[in-house]
Each structure stands twice: as structure tokens, then as C-alpha cells.
Length: 183
Length: 102
Image 1 (cartoon, rainbow over the protein chains, first blue to last red):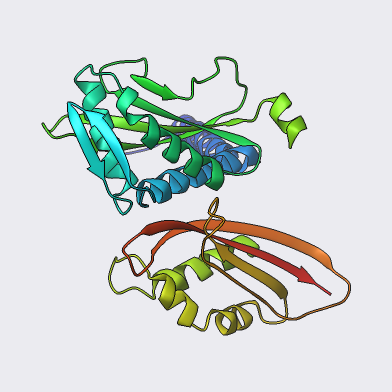
Image 2 (image 1 turned 180 degrees about the horizontal axis):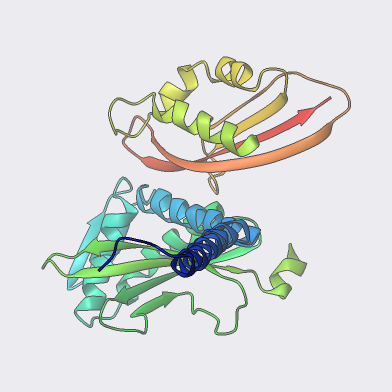
């Protein structure tokens, strides 16, 4: 085997260099294009999602504001200082065990009013309880409309007494046209 | 600009509580927020309102830079945070900021 490189080999090396260079250039260009071509709506959507997450966290971390009674196995007196998060965990526990949530009606009304007051204008909040192994929500407050073009959602995980987890999902949908007219 | 400013105001309010505790309404009342916002926004005119959404009997703080005249280039931003009163009741507060130029 000889260490000499003839003109033919040099030509092949030049072609290979060119191929590698163009492949690298195409790769770098495609990566740059994928970032620069990102539509502005993506940023807006992530900002909106962040806003929904902030809204959900703020409401869950606040007090319910009124003394009320929850009926679950037995009547439970809940003070106005109790946190929404803790009350919803009790309701989630009830749902997880397959119970009815009629006894939580007052709590649900308070939470929905808080979400409605804090939500952006012309957006309607919906609160869902979802168990991880089920695709359908265990409870939706109020019923989530099927055909909505635009909606934003965020969720938190609540740990129940037995260690199980349930998701509380906040979905914001544009208000129905009839509601907009009333405004 | 308005969004960044309102986030700075929220951070300022949250810094009124030690550690990760929820700030007290009384601390917000006694803080020098208007001077903070004036320094933050420099020559930009502003109006700030901090209140608890949906509570008609709720606590509220508002201030502005006392500007009167023509308004242009307005921008609005708002943000939510939690605060608690002396009874231990935790409420949602909304900080609303409007900024404008002459």
C-alpha cells in the first residue's frame, strides 16, 4: 500500500468535502428556520396557558370566603378560611370513591363564582375532575361544550387521603354569543 | 412594557412577606408601592388598581401619577396573586396597570 495520493483521489476528497459541507449547511439552515418560522400564535398560546395556570393556582390557594356545610358521609362544617384546594380534595375523594357530589353544591357554586370573577373577560371557566386512568371527567362544572374552536386549559394534581391522585382541570372557553350580547 | 411592569409590581408585593408566605393586605397598604411604580416607569404615565375580583365589599388600593392631558400609546396588563387579611382569610388579588404616553 502506498502513501501517495493521486489527482483522482484528491478530486473524490473534494467532492466528499463539498457534500459534507452542503449537508451541514442544510441541517443548520433547517434548524434555524424551524425557530425563526415559529408562528407568533405559539408564543401567544403559551402565554395564555400560563395565564390559565396562574388563575387556577391563585383560586386554589385562596380561602373559600364563606362558612359552609359539606355533606359527605356526614355533615362537615367548613370555615371561611379553608383553602379551595383542600375543599376540592375532599370532593375529589368523594368522586374517586364513586359518591354523589350533591352535598358539595354550595362549594362548587363558590369556586365557580371565584373563577368567573378572576377569569379574563368573555371567557367562561369550566372545572373538571379527572382520574388519571379515566379519559372522561368524573365531574364537569358546568358541562363542557363539545364544539369549541378555542380553549385553554391547565391542571393541578391533588393527592387524596389514601394517596391516590386526581386531576383538577381548569378549561377556559370563549363565552357563548348570547352571553356576549347580554354584556 | 406593561406586562413586565405588572410582574415587577407583583414581585414587589410578594417580597413584602418573608420567605414563601402570603403577603398581608396591611403590608400592601403600608408599603410605598406608588413610589416604587413611579421609579419603575420613569416618565411613563400610569394608573394602578389592586383589588379582589368579584368581592364588592373587598379591599382596594389605587394610585396614579396625577397626569392630566392627552393620552396616546396606551397599554394594559394585569396579574393575579394571593394575599391574606388579619383574620387569616386568603383572597385573590388582581393588579391592573394602565400605562400611556403624552
